[in-house]
Length: 326
Image (cartoon, rainbow, N blue to C red; front, top):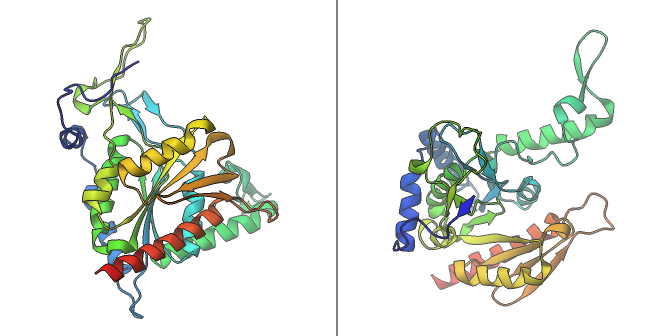
């Protein structure tokens, strides 16, 4: 595959690159439905009888695909199980947030950490009467997952929106951000999804499956415009924005995270190294670098637990600071 840096017309400005991406994207099939769900969810969590509106966080989770054909059979994928985003969603709910969970179809889901990899087949069994029941060894975990998930949805605190492709993801992120503008500083973006760096513009794709038989497949990929800056400056300019930087080389990780913080004007960047990402992360801000570790003395604890506590506190301080300026 031949990856070219930038769009095919190198003279394009960044604004033109962004416009070209969205112009190239096939329209969302359920755009109106998503828009209505977002509108209702945000309205519900902006109006409380005690006068204290909820903080709302958009958690992005899982990896995006970059299709190679319009009737897609082959695609370029980004590595991500969605564990970070799903687990963080649970801790955001415990911290009092309402959560918009923008996730890759088939990726890890909130409240499922204690379930086996294939919960449908491993958690259930048939008895002699051919009735299905929960295996006793998993009964407590299944019960807890169902109760906690249903409670979050029933209370209007969890809205789940699935995507698969880079086109769907960025269109839905834009819709979500524009819907959250009314929240001002009470809105947060926790951008833990693994977003494609390169894609094939829709208009440049073949319609049908690419046929095999050729020794060399030459596919030109163009760079996906980095939407982080647009998110923070145009789509939701008052929101508290957290992005992630994953590297396999720990020697360049913090330097890359610091560069992303300044370039995209994030409030914090969570730096994680691939092999240790479940044990510790480093939260990089403009003034400090804070190492956050999983509590190994507490069975079942996750690094997301102290991470969300830290970020929640920083978000509260940001809200208070924003209120004092006005």
